[in-house]
Length: 359
Ligand code: DAH
Image (tube, rainbow, N blue to C red; front, side, top):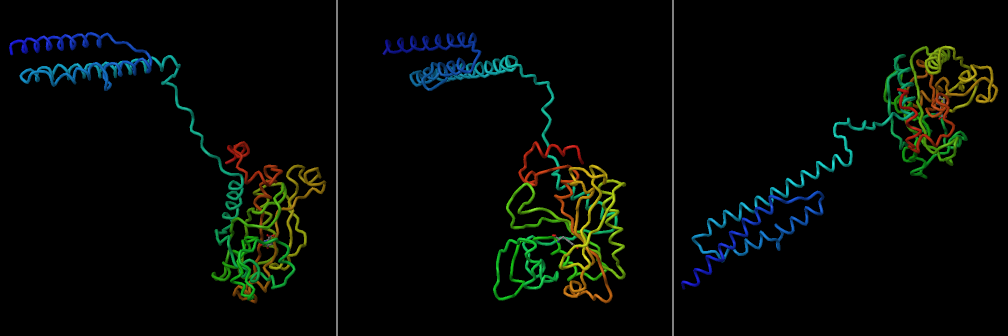
């Protein structure tokens, strides 16, 4: 029995020595990279580490001394954990200096997007017509034959339906034009919607996307954008149309711009015209850009055909009106000399950045 106690107290002295030893060792520890630090952590604190080994011996300590041992062991463990954490902070700070990270340098500027050229031009056109009292109207891109064609005076087998290669979604053979569903091929469809639901006077513009079944090339695309204009009131004349379009052209391309109207054909206007503006590059002298004519075409227009007014429920004996349709890509090409229509939908940031300072 006596021997046993002597053995135990020797054992305890050894344990205390080991604790003191480890404390001294830990105070001296050094590590200047994460591998060295991890090695230290394994050596002292892992499952097979030296401090853990001491914890395992704890059960051999007599009960009346467990309290003191426990405290000492916990102190040791806390010391080791603190040391390892502070070593980590130290070499992290050194790494920052070594990698020449200047934490006082201002952050890189946030890259913010730019407005798309089509949006810029659409906004510019909307602003011009807003100043003349036009308000915005909207309609669906997936539309029925009734609004895209029939009520705009395209009779069932009217050859003018072939002027635009339409995407058909649902072809209804019964002849019910409200069940024939298409992707609208022009924003004129919004005219018929507004006329059917609004009492004149009507003065609207409607910007929107339109679709045509065309092979995609530099000069044609299967979708593009238009802005439709419509003015219906008593005594609206062709002279009013001309005056508004002249104002529009001057606002858009500059005060020296001239316009010219050439007779044309659209089923929904009578008379119909196409409008040219004096070439913005040569001012009308004639150059490569305007094919030496001095003029470039920008829109279609005309007086709303009385048939269309009647089809949309407006009394053509009381009211007259004009309409026009502008291609937004066309105007953007002319203003910014974009030669290839595909650029507008490819989202190449090098192209889009060119417009960064335009707004
Ligand atoms: N909708 C025609 C097109 O897409 C453009 C157009 C011409 C619209 C004459 C009009 C107009 O409102 O009066 O080609």
